[in-house]
Amino acid sequence: MSIYTADIILFLLLVSILNNPLLNIFLALGWNFLFSEVLIGVILLVIVVVVHKFLFSKFLK
Image: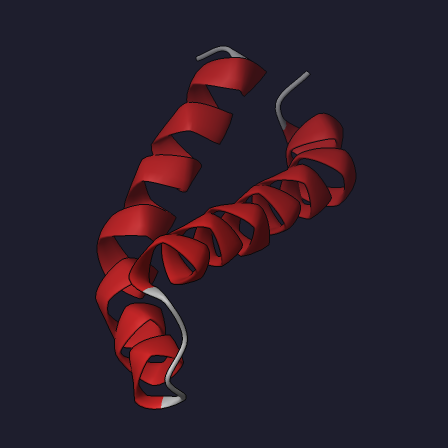
């Protein structure tokens, strides 16, 4: 499996698991829906980049 395929699978799993709980938290804070979704996307991309840099690059070469 390519390292980039693993990144895509990880991102899709994170979106499916974390999107609804984070969206509920952000909407409870009174934030706009669009801003909340963009912020969730940025948070998930940061998680994927960190996992790619420190975990996948060491094990999936």
